[in-house]
Each structure stands twice: as structure tokens, then as C-alpha cells.
Image (cartoon, rainbow, N blue to C red; front, side):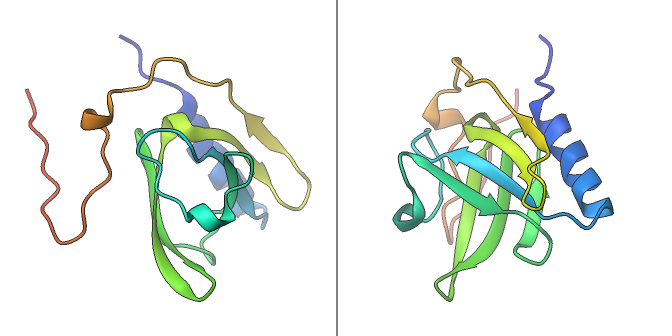
Length: 126
């Protein structure tokens, strides 16, 4: 089984934007399973998030998930975005970036659940 190129492309474009002093935004399908974003900012099932270093704390661009903390209306919020929920990454200043086709095969929610606050986040590895 081949791994998806999507997380690698997201990281590469993020790095290119950072190197060129551009602001990386991601377009997220907020209605996808296990997507934790502030619902009050979701419009038509989507949310656009600034994932620049100045807008996030603890940003992790992983192969399965994008995680970080950000302020919304002054409140620090944990953001958890499964890679399959990312529709696009682009630079705010010029719109350059990449959009991704919608993925049809989503992992079962029990395998890709966001971490619970105050509880250990352990997985069984075969």
C-alpha cells in the first residue's frame, strides 16, 4: 500500500510559503469525522485557517493530522484536522498553492480520534 502524497505536499508548500514570507492558509472540510475546529467560524461546512508560525502554537504537520493551538475571539483553542479533511493549502497574499480532490475512503472514526484532554493518548500497534 502506498502512502498518500498529500501530507508531504502540504509540508512542502508550507515550507515554501514560510521561506517566501507568505501566510499559509488551509481550507478544511469541517464536517469530516474527527475534525476539531471552532464551529462558530464554519461556513457552508468549511473553515479557512491561518497556519503560519505567528498564528499557531505547537504546529505539527503530520502524515495523518495537522494539530495546533490558536486564538479565536481571544480564547486559546485546540485544533485537530485529519489530513483527509484538508481541501487546499494556499498563500493568503497571492493565492498560490494547491487544492486536493475529496478523499472517498476515510478511516473509521475509532482509528483516527482526536486526543482527549486530561487522558492519555495511546494506540495499539500491531
